[in-house]
Image (tube, rainbow, N blue to C red; front, side):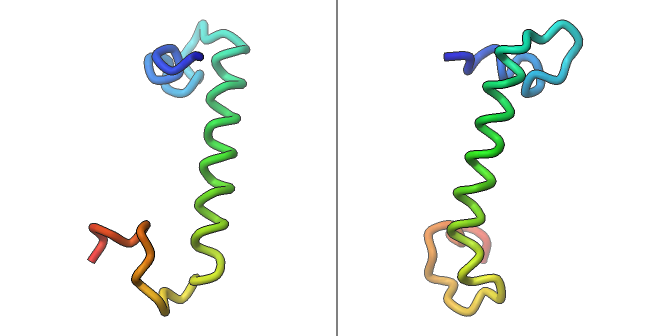
Length: 58
């Protein structure tokens, strides 16, 4: 809903960003971090590098 505003305001961190845009950006960041942790936590020592997230990092 706030995609362009989130990007244009540096994820709601520029002066004049609305509280709604900041909240949307924070929610996006939290959910992204949560998903990344779900994928990465079981493989912190990179034992099985066949995961989709590792594609392009080799």
